[in-house]
Length: 294
Image: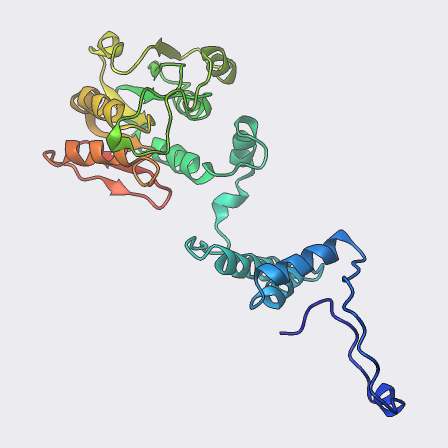
């Protein structure tokens, strides 16, 4: 393939005035007019068979007259060419235009990090299915409080408690079944960060400590919704052993980590636990899994 930034091709008039071959000149380093041109040349080196295609797709997506759908197609084509393992989702999903929810998400998440938008949206929707039930709600693994906020908001007009369990020292020591992705202390957030996130609510209680050391303090409660987001085998298993028998009929257990290769221990714990139970786990494309207590 001809280089993107090569010399100008000879025209017919140029060729007609040449009476003899020009002497061979030493090759000169290309001169770039801008950083963008330099980057285009580097793309050609990295992907000589795809460079023109990639840049054409990018140009098409950036053109002012391009429609939203055309830009979506350009983004899909670029993603397919660069990261084919990822499967681009369908165009025009209305949850991506939920301005109120997007504002909530941006309040809590790092700038530019949309990685858990779909999971938080799914959780917020599942909460609607238990509003008519009795019982409290709980979360194991609160981090900075973004999902705890959804719990407190969903039940703010009800006389129930939201029970929030976290070490506030990050993850415990992973074991061999947990793989190599996590380290002890990962995902550390201070209890003050959680309280700041929940400053507009008074319907929650925090339990600082390693799971399951403080579960006994909620042993007399019944639960309609439990969110388990602890990433590792043992705390996932401990959480299920405690909360499952205390779920009301129709209550939902939502597992945040079940569908991620980075959390093999959490998945194994849940699979082992539900192997002997009447309920099945439903894996969502978000990476979450949930079950409804019979």
